[in-house]
Length: 124
Image (cartoon, rainbow, N blue to C red; front, side, top):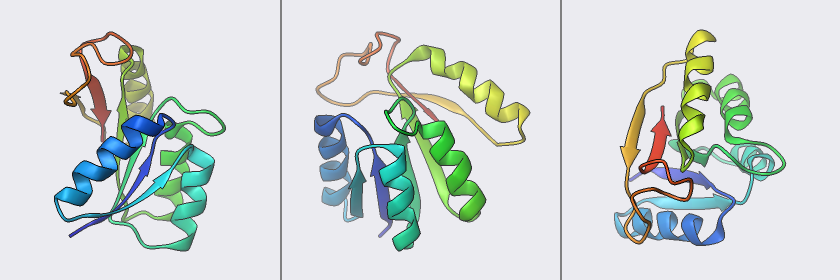
């Protein structure tokens, strides 16, 4: 199975995602912000970086840019509960990155997500 780095500042959501992926047979490593996530990437080989966009210290967009520059083969999936992050997708597309937005609903979270925007938006 895959080795996945989960970068999310909300402890409960990070643990929830990690546990779900572990139950599916994946190995997970957790980081609480982008800077911690980048440090984790330096020390191991990951199949996927799964990251929130809005985080303290270093946001997920900056983490994705640095991670893709350092590890071009790494697959990156960004998620957010905030609808205004769709603008970020457009900015990334203009910079030549391939992005897609998909609504994803996590059990235990209202359909509005924490940002009230109709779900968790994932760009990859």
